[in-house]
Length: 258
Ligand SMILES: Nc1ncnc2c1ncn2[C@@H]1O[C@H](COP(=O)(O)OP(=O)(O)OP(=O)(O)O)[C@@H](O)[C@H]1O
Image 1 (cartoon, protein in one colour):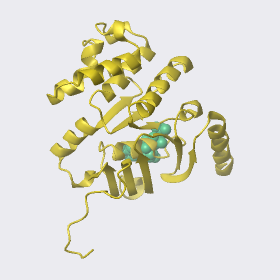
Image 2: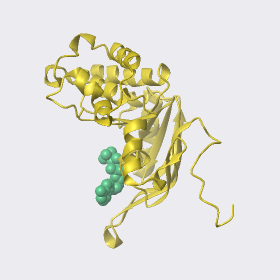
Image 3: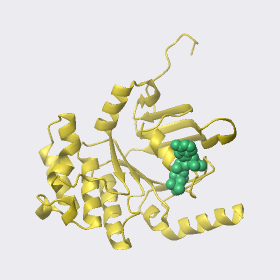
Image 4: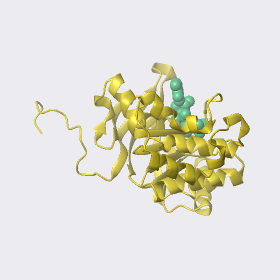
């Protein structure tokens, strides 16, 4: 490619990649306070696959997720959602892309307490002025198993039920990718399992790409692949992880670091 040619902004050769970061570097602060939160990380998040991002506290998991989702910008390298490089977008287009192509699930549920379950689920669509796809919404409501609670407020639901609503909200706009940051961090193991089963169904039955940051080997066991970060670097990955294998790998890292 000549120096005068425009930079490529599509990834046509890899259509099955829903999200990607390439040679990603993120530096916070300057001089003595500089922290290299991501240090040349390249990773693909395939379509219709569930990826768990693991690693010790401070290893860069949230930074990776925030930069991949366009909530934060990279210091160097590129982040892509499908064929769109986020660094080429202005703020308005980035906001639209996040709204239309990405769903988010947070540890703290983040539902609006004054709205009903149904209103919370359709909130992103309402804010975007988009017409809901009724058949899709019906199937989501069916999958989360809260059809009899649609007119309840979040305060009348258990934590696990609230997080199931948050997952439905994340999926309501049929996003290309769902980013989930410790989605089971506030839940006991049984309700956590329900939420993870729901994310799994979003991948298997709805073809979504799910990227989940977690500390929990059991949660990672629901994923198709687990990525391991340490000191801002991608140090390992595991296909078809199980809780036991992930736990063994984490112990091995700890032994190596001590
Ligand atoms: N806004 C910020 N300003 C300065 N440093 C930051 C900022 N955000 C994160 N960091 C630093 O970047 C590094 C990676 O942080 P990050 O939150 O991505 O780690 P993490 O793996 O998600 O950690 P945890 O599991 O504790 O949530 C840490 O050293 C952190 O202190």
